[in-house]
Image 1 (tube, one colour):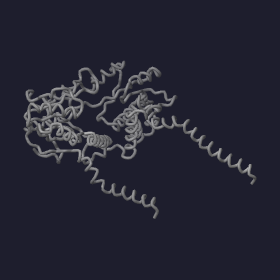
Image 2 (tube, helix red, strand yellow; image 1 turned 90 degrees about the horizontal axis):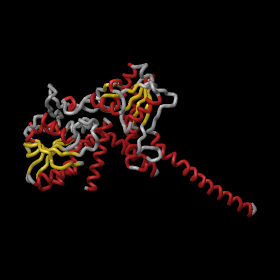
Image 3 (cartoon, rainbow over the protein chains, first blue to last red; image 1 turned 135 degrees about the vertical axis):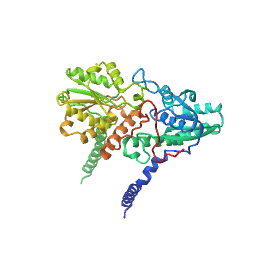
Length: 202
Length: 245
């Protein structure tokens, strides 16, 4: 058999193997992005910016489960102008949702300073923990974001406190079926690119 | 063969070979701009000159209202239609303005009278459902929307065309045309010069390829933490993998 034919058969074999094993590696790819730490009561619950329709509601649930005494939230910079003038920015909407969910106003604490991105949020949290060293923080973010966010936060917070991740559901991403929707596929590919970028650049 | 003739023959062969290559190179250089623009052209679509639309709507995109205004100006009897997405739970809870008021505001801002613009109400927000809703509306409005122009961002074109070809009856499909907006980073002459040009092209092709191979895919799930009264939150995790506290 010539080298070219051998390479052709080998390629076909690899593709067949990948297809046959897809019920295993496809969910594994999605599942690897999701980190669910053991849920224990923490000093703070932190709601990361973004996905404002989901994350604060999950933080409310966590608060009522006794998983945090206070709820911190990031004040994200609005990247887009609101569609209408009276549409509240995220930094106002998050506390409004928390209050609607029964979190007492005195338990809702904005992290000082505007942020843009997970790294900015990690820096703000580290600054806050300088004044509350040794605290434990339960971080609420969308499920596909938990792996990378956990790395970034733990890297910045380091010895200041402990971080645990609580994944919030994503309407467009289900770890065991993510490839069955274009949004899920795009999310996973984008997140792995960001993971790679983080691993390379730090 | 005599030496001079052989020399002439070899020389002419040499010249022909070089000329051939030079000619080919010249053709490539001349054709390159057109060839480079081809990928971006796959994400462009405009109604043919004789289409004469009776209705138009936009699925969003940069300055899409300007394109609607242009259609209205060129076809004075044109009916402008608007899509209205369902309210998110934060809107139903009164934390954000509802979709109706957002649509009214945007239409007025774009120079349309909201009271005169018919709305197609969507039950869900994703491309295939939008096409279904459009198809149903076209069936209901054979006269007002006998020929409908849909203004879209080029990134969504292939996916929407695929959805239209699979979901709509041929007669209904024939009454619909897509009109892509001028995407600054996605023009045939410039798309390869910027990162967003590459990204938008890849996104548009990927979405089209996905629609071709996998069809509609799964619908996005609904996340609705409102309690029965709609005034409070009562969300419980139902994912069996979710650890109990």
